[in-house]
Image (cartoon, rainbow, N blue to C red):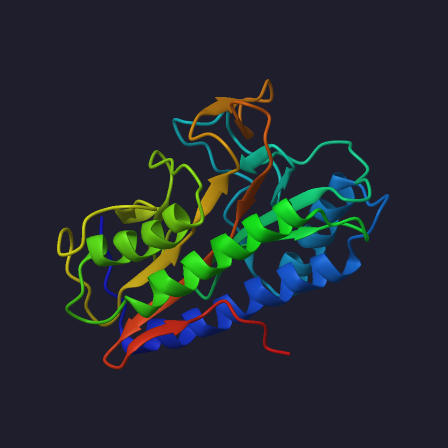
Length: 257
């Protein structure tokens, strides 16, 4: 299903996006060496409930996971890249942490992810990988405007990731959002320009470049959810929800403060 939102729904989406961004960046500021992943999940739960929003994850039970997910945020550490199920783990200095959050507010969903290094021991390779996903995300957003095709976004993202030397997995990627979290169209992180669905105003898309340092292979953790790099290498993930407007792409998941 592909939803085209009304102007009123897009206005509500701005509120949802700001909430998601504010929660993510508050969590990032509070996270330090010794922070437990379960504490991050509890903090996220409290902020979602306080805002009068609804989690998109707690009851989520897709075919690719051992559902329901049962938590409020995805916490992926080091070799974990997607769908990281929070567990009893205290973060160590130098860990690479990705936080992925989707909530619904006023009937409209927004989805975003950030990656960062915990503590003061940031190895250059991890910093460069995070930066590459952020550049790829910016390139995908710059390619998004009415009349563009999904393939244009995928090609822009893939060009940045490929130039940086990272293998690209296309099993999971960006997607449409709206009244629900995961909708069509699927947006692979590489592709051919000029192909796919044509963008038009009112379309909400979650773009999410993610990479693994030396492989495009994934393995599923014993928890049935967490996806890890097949070689145990580090990973990174960046994501924004955007709205297609008559002027181009509006990033919805930017902090309000």
